[in-house]
Amino acid sequence: MEGVTQPRGSASNAQAASAALSGAVDLSGLKQRADAARQSNQGGPQRGQAGGTSGGAGGAGAVIDVTESTFQSEVIDRSMRQLVVVDLWADWCGPCKQLSPVLEKLAAESDGAWTLAKVDVDANPRISQAFGVQSIPTVVAIAAGQPVDAFSGALPESQIRQWVDQLLDALRDRLPGAGAADGQTEEEPAEEEQDPRFTEAEAAIERGDYAGAQAAYQRILDSEPGNEQAAAALAQVRFAERASTTDPSAVERADADPDDLQAQLAAADYEIASGAVEDGFGRLTATARRVAGDNRDRVREHLVGLFDLFDPADQRVAKARRDLASALF
Image 1: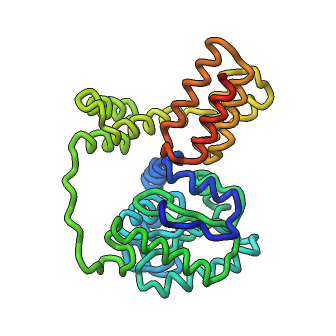
Image 2 (image 1 turned 90 degrees about the vertical axis):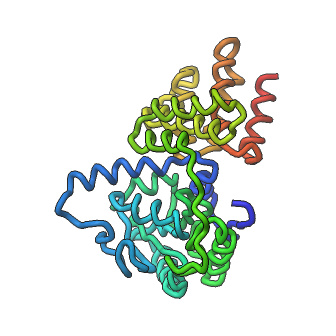
């Protein structure tokens, strides 16, 4: 997010979580798992009863425990109205035991301006995988359904407080609850009129109907070829569909056989979806140097398609474009 600086001392693996700023991490996949878990666990713990340390779901609890089954409601849905800070921790992690109490204290002092969502990574591995987290503690800020910033390690309280304050200031105009107790904003923003064409596409995504979503976005582009929002959304959905079928073993296969072009393409998709953006880009530029003719064109087209998932100003994209040009020419 422009205007928000990642705290000094953040580990490089936190970049994987922040990669989702460009839409490369699909958090919505957790929604399907959450829905399935709720359907198979009827009569069990309800929303917000995952062992939250303070308050319940839908309330003003400053600190809540989150699981894979409650992630959609307690993190994604909640982040549509206020900042949610996700603390990824584990019992065996010493620095986590230093950081978590500081986060809990600051959340309690915020008077509902933001919520701390605690995730035990051992019990909920898919959540940390969705963020591409490689070490803990890692803290990820979620707003409007997407990560906006992240840091790793046990930072000083003053530094964390400054980080949260910067986020709240930056989000004040985007989220109704940013900087104020949940549900106690001074003025409710006017509700934006929704474009039914986009609503149709988003409903298809919610159903897991990638083909229907693509068709809906394509209809928008057919009538409005310059609609950048529809074009970006179409690229994201196409990638999400492709990545959802990618076998994690593709990376191992690609590393074992550099000449297996299909494995290289699949491995790059998996790395991008996992947040290892530079690894995915680097893999394909290296492949472009090794192959020729139609295979080189295929790699180029695949990589350029991946660029479309990101902000054109993203430095990782700019570097990969330079590397690709060098590989081709």
